Length: 105
Image (tube, rainbow, N blue to C red):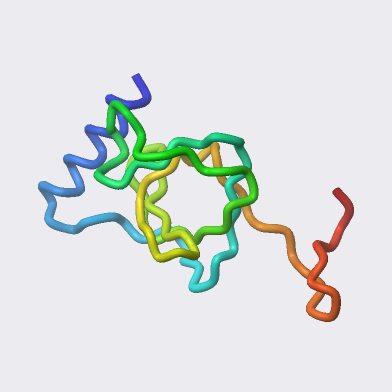
């Protein structure tokens, strides 16, 4: 059902000629991380039957668009693809002096 929902949303965006919608607030930096080990990463679209690869937990990315319950993301490597919205979360803030995450965990 989730794949069908992503497919419908992606097709609607393509038919509208608008590509991916911009996520509110955007994020120019790689301020998001993969929070689910082995998260599906789909290069061609959010409704692929078989993912191109699986991402490790902690992989940094930035959100560049949205389609249904998927985000279009760019990895630090420059690759772009789709990942489920429940598989990423904001990266912890880092202390600029130590590079370590702030706020427990």
